[in-house]
Length: 363
Image 1 (cartoon, rainbow, N blue to C red):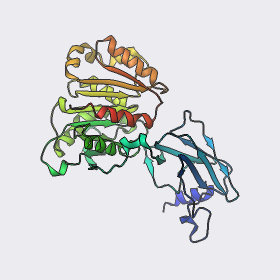
Image 2: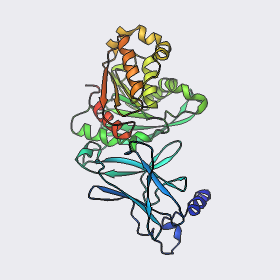
Image 3: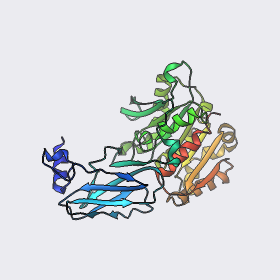
Image 4: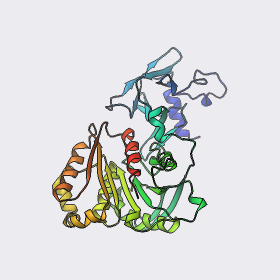
């Protein structure tokens, strides 16, 4: 076990039962999250803590919720009225972000790790692990010539990939800031969403490439080059894919939306399906200057791109930038659809956006 982690856990008074080395502890039988009758109780054993809070992606603000402690040092909070969905959360114990030691479900990122829980209901059927044929999520390592290092991406292959010799269209699906290439296949539920759509006949079988858009600080502006020069090359060398713009789609959320804007702005003839989620620009002039060539060929862009959409929640802090992006495209005659949803800057929206966009692809 990592010594620093162990010391940090013990100094906070957080126990997970396994750390007690045979000594009885209230944490031994602790269940967290405890889900019953639509309510979710989050609990942590921290007998020496003075304050425990939690933040989760169901919250409209980042104001932490306070947990209450009982005589055994178990801190708990019950959350009611959540709609069925997949949620993430993180405890804070006396100022230290802390994972729930009783919950092995985690979402990994480049700056933090969060816990997850699933509140099942009719609304979650589109992303549930249903009894249908399942594809595979593959971890693919490759040498990035652009960055001069080994990089990793997650790649979804459809259920019949290994049983046929056919080729498939490719959807490049980009994550947001703070995440990495596992985000879409964990909290994003991408594999299950595609499995269910394909099984229902609502989407074409396709390969979904989920690269790591979180680049080293010195290379943050290089994602578009890495995608076009390295990732596309590796995918087309290692997988049976249909070649050409009509068989390629790209979409992304937040930072991934900005990456999508860069990719289509510099390569408008390479992708026939484009969607930008929870992302935009604060300055139309800056956007126009950076992509002057793109705007100058609006007529050709409209001919090459079969689907171009911008989607954002009305409570999303990216909403004004998304409006600016849409208005700038319209000003220059770039045909697209601007779609408003409820909700904010959250995976609760982005999974829905993926579900709806995937149905439109390669038809």
